[in-house]
Structure formats: structure tokens, C-alpha cells
Amino acid sequence: MILITKIISVVFNPLMISPFTFSILIFNANNPNNYLLFIISIVFTTILPFSTILYYKKKGKISSYEAPIREQRLQLLVISSIYNLIGFVLLNYYDASAIVQGLMFCYAMNTAITWIITRYWKISIHMIGLGGPFIALNLAGYNNSNIMVAIIILVYFSRIKLKAHNHLQLIAGTFLAIILSYIELTYLFL
Image (cartoon, rainbow, N blue to C red; front, side, top):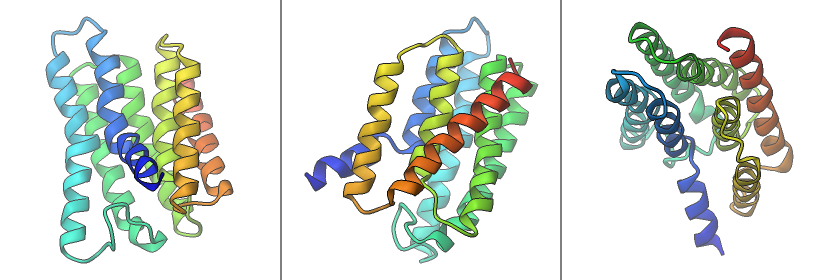
């Protein structure tokens, strides 16, 4: 059972959800820069953050790749937020669709807000990483709410089983991301 929960946590890790979400949003739009937009999205939400995690692990700044200790997450969150902000600027420059720019903006802002919260309390980054993309997909017309809710429930219980978070940390992460992303996307981009 532990192996299954670990697999769920890896497959639905924010770094894995991001390329999947951006691919759907980017390649279903008619933009001559689609491949460039996708590369920008992957580089600034997955490749650079993952490379930074690998570097921090190698240097002993984090105890594991998931950075389970709250204090170990702080620098990673700031750096990731900066990566996301640069990605947003590039997506804007290359005229990505509003939903694609908006999602990258959500990544930057929600990660910065997560950093503020994490200074005082551990919140689930996994659940935050699911909430934003699911709202973006829903607002873009991909109304697969049953699948999205099922994924949230699977990740929720896998994180509980792995003792990575308590219920409040998971619920807070889920609702924070959903509410913030909805507000950011609908009021600033759509």
C-alpha cells in the first residue's frame, strides 16, 4: 500500500502536473508559437525547479527530494516563484493565450503566498499544485470535474497515508489554490 501511495504522490506531484496542464492549454490553441510556449512553460515550472531541488539535495540543504521539513522549503519556494514570474513575462512577450499566461501567473503568485504561509505553518504543496491547474482547465472548458475530484481525493489520502501532512494542511492547500486561482484567473486574465 505504501508503494502505491508513493507512486500517486510522484505522478501527481506539482512538477508533473504542470507540463500536462500546459500541454492541454497550449496545444489546443491556434498559436504559431505553441512549441516555444510549451518549452517556456516546462522550463520555468518543471525543469528549473527540479534542477534546483536536485542541487539542494546534493548540497545537503534539504533532507529529501520532497523537502518534508517546513524550513527547508522556504528558499525553494522563493526561487520557484521567481522562475514562474520569469516564465510569465516570457509567455506574455510571446503572446500566449490569456489562460496560459494566467496559469503561469497563478504559479508565481500562489507559490509566493505559499512561501508566506510556510514561514509559519506547513501547508500541502501537492494540493496547491493540483488546485490551480484544475481551475485553469475547468475555466478553459475542460469540465472533467469527476476526474479532477478523484485525483484530489487520491492525492489527499496518499499524503495522509505517507504521513506527509495532516488533514488541515491538505484541506487548506486545496482550497487556497482553488480560491486564489479562480480569483486570479477570472479577474485578471479572463
